[in-house]
Length: 590
Image (cartoon, rainbow, N blue to C red; front, side, top):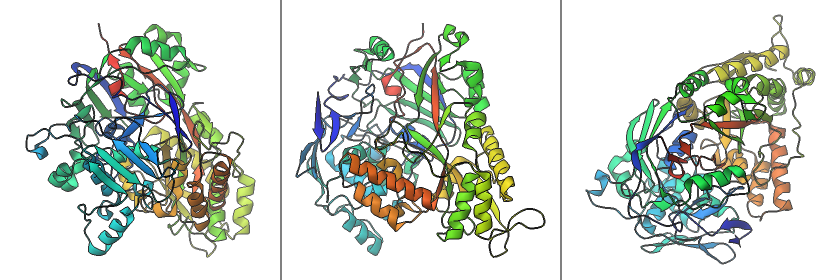
């Protein structure tokens, strides 16, 4: 059954209501082996938006809400909450009832006692995201929204200490299991925010015990806990013995694949997987060899392997005969190049600086990227909002295309003159040299070649400093990289989640372009007050055009992913929002 809460469709059903079991039924003999193509940044989700950190954290921490495993489009369901919240005062007041009997994983921080999840843990978790000392890249999700919470942050900035004990009118634990949240204004996406990983409950005792090392010692109420962690090398998860478990009971869509999944999984006590072993393998070829050598159970097909694996959009017979399964999906995400608006070379808001960024963008051939990097496994990105996300307009076409002649005319007009060597200088005569930081993988080598081919035709020099992803993310977050390749996958299925990446309040805290535009921010601030519909979509379109006008990003492609899994993996289906699926699948080796 569905109800409509402030314009958003949600499902009345959850993992809790699917039935519980006495204890975590996971079997340590059932192991899933996967690989990440880049390193995490620790597991303190108040301090990071690292994709791989979030992936693992989903298995460790539990927000109040989550998503139905099979439903498409993505639909919210209760997780730590007993049911969807009661909503009052025109969508500004939410009352959540937390399931009794949820416990944190065992940890010395609890003095060897069982520690039950309470409403106060969510109060603390929300406050941490706005504690100035954490410089949370997720702060904008709740900044300016909860009654009284910003005042606590303002006081902390003056005093130098955040007062976690101070009561906040809009964020209250009414009793042990009841949480009341009051917003200043109606926010039609607020329940999506509640489901976001940064708001998975953490315990104050754990943060007090581990302090700045909390990201290395994550302790949550979810189905898994860290067993072994070698930063930038290996992550090993094991079943949380305090996890309550559930009975698998999801409703299929009309697809034959969903019906097969239900046949495989219906009624099982979950989770079944007892251990997860994650290796950090940044090279596509190495990951593919590991999968072919049976060292990985689940992996996304490397783009370089597409010609040998796929026959159109289906697996070649050699793979189907080996029992390999495939779930092929269009990413709910985008890829782009970031221009740092504070950088002395590519930054700035004057006409000549905007012209430089537009010309650079025109020099990059996205068709070459899709053909040479994605090997056909991608779609040209025409706007900030990708397919499958609310606010996406399939008729939209970017105003900045691949156009070398026009790019040269633009640079000539704004005074970027060619020297005797054929290379251009800045309008003031100083050298013009771009620096685009990249990671050390074959993918980025090919993309760098595409950039250089285009920019050579403009007479612009470019260098490609190489560093690892985690360090690059930290540098970009501090507005220290001139240009960098970015990617974003949806945290929730609305265009706001992509458009917020360029809001001025996030500059230096997730807005890696460090872009600050009063016009863009005004459109964003108005859009988030509106319900689903044409007016909000119209403002989303205006924000997209404002982005093109200022060019803090050069949009590239949306990736088509072909997720491959071994015949013993049962129930696998890639979710557009959730990434940690180990608690929903099984391993059956005979």
